[in-house]
Image (cartoon, rainbow, N blue to C red; front, side, top):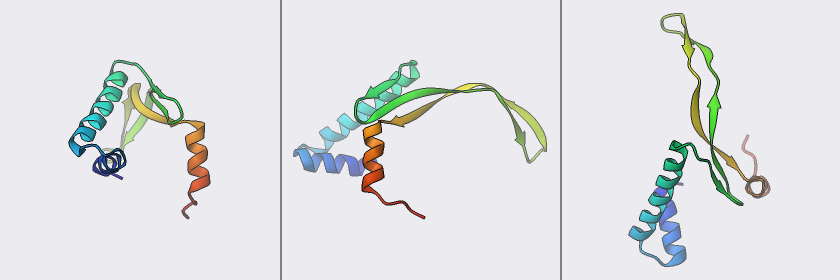
Length: 97
């Protein structure tokens, strides 16, 4: 599902203009992104949390030059789904093999 699909579904469900819904969805995404960039986690009860994870420094390999490189510690954004969200996905979808 793409952002356009989400906008179309919300617009259809609520009877709002697609342009208004798109502006709302984009504002939501901007707020989540801005919060994470300033170091604040975003908690959405019943849905999940957008959090900042810190990756430790590690040693990697540049296989084209056959050398080792040091990858510095860094932060990455992550999503942690709520338990009710995970349970719903588990019960309503079948596993793909």
